[in-house]
Image 1 (tube, each protein chain N blue to C red):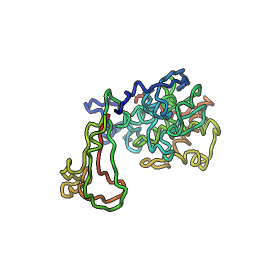
Image 2: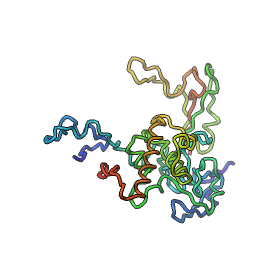
Image 3: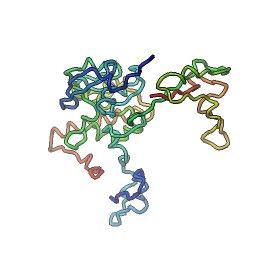
Image 4: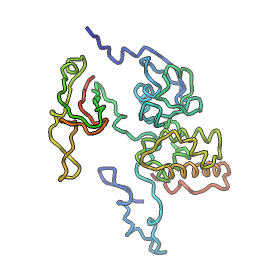
Amino acid sequence: MLVTLSVESRKTEHIRLALNGEETDVFFAPYKTLLEVLREDLGHTGTKHGCELGECGACAVLVNGKPVLSCLVLALECNGQEIETVEGLAADGKLHPLQEAFADLGAAQCGYCTPGILVTAKALLAENPHPSRAQIREAISGNLCRCTGYLQIFEAVEAAILQIGNSCNPENESTAGEQHAGI
Amino acid sequence: MPESKGTTGCVSEELVESPVREVDNAAQKPRVIGIPRRRVDARAKVTGQTRFADDIFLPRMAYCKLLRSPHPHARIRKIDVSRAKAHPGVYLVLTGSDLPIEYGIIPVSEDEQALCLDHVRHVGDPVAAVIAR
């Protein structure tokens, strides 16, 4: 007689991680990937479930600041790690400059690849604040987009770099973004 | 900026703000034409708040898995679903004969099948669906 265990009773493992800066405890089934735990056990569905093969980059998250494909990482490996997802990019109700630029410049169309590209781009800028177009292209080469087209995405990353540079020098503060403050 | 009062919540800004009427009388310069506008759903897209079908989790949700053709072109002689139906936790097993009505995006070419009836035409053509716990 085959006994089917309920999903709840399979949640035998426990880890504690810093999810978007917040200390988080989660119980889950031991076979689950980081992606599945984020989406199914922690309710963070912003990170997308794409190919589950490490081909598409939709599931990219930052582990200790480095972009990883969460569909290929077991959640059990992440005990004590710092995880950042797309939900953690905006702070205090203000979008990250990358998010502003992606929204303003039409770099998010259907939006399925967007979370993965945003966190990957954030990791790039943390490592290299002024990448060339070729370096941006290289950094997000693991993120497939099938509708927006990559040009708008490259342009948005470059616009965000300018915006970040401007906000470091307040006298150069541009008005970009104010136009949409009401939305 | 006029606020959308539509009940659907998905009226595009371009429709709400008619470019023809939005003319600054003083300067006679259009305030909308030629100015890029943010998409109405852009903020939700870049914050991960957009709910795609795969993002919906409901209590006691059932799952569907498709059996797809491994062949590029082949006839379906018969399908035996008895073992799948007998498996614990399986609610429903569907094959092409359960969904016999053909459909299509244009009324004159309704020649698509949800599940292949007697013929698969590409690798990955869906043949059967199992809906289970």
